[in-house]
Amino acid sequence: MNAKAVKSTQRLMRLMTAIVDGTGTAALSGLCASDMTLTDQGTGDYLLTFDVPYARAPQVIATPVTDNIVCKVGTVGVGSVQILTENLSGSATDADFHVFVLGSDAEDAI
Image (cartoon, rainbow, N blue to C red):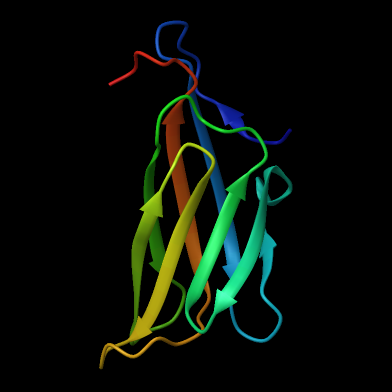
């Protein structure tokens, strides 16, 4: 597992990052790409599934690689996150983006 652990015996924080190539054949790259799988669910709709679920739903940030694209975080669960991409007119469109996932492996974490 390549996910980077944030050293904290109290909260057991875990950080994962990846680059999603959402144009053409959707693919993952980056340091933690091997710790999650990508499912292309249709135009501008991506599901990232974590190999090891978090104890509670993590915090997720997604940012587009190119201009004129908006990334939205959809459904977030302990084992996956949905990312939606659209153009500035609000129409779903395939796009490349970076994703940052920070969560805890302790059930009582805030």
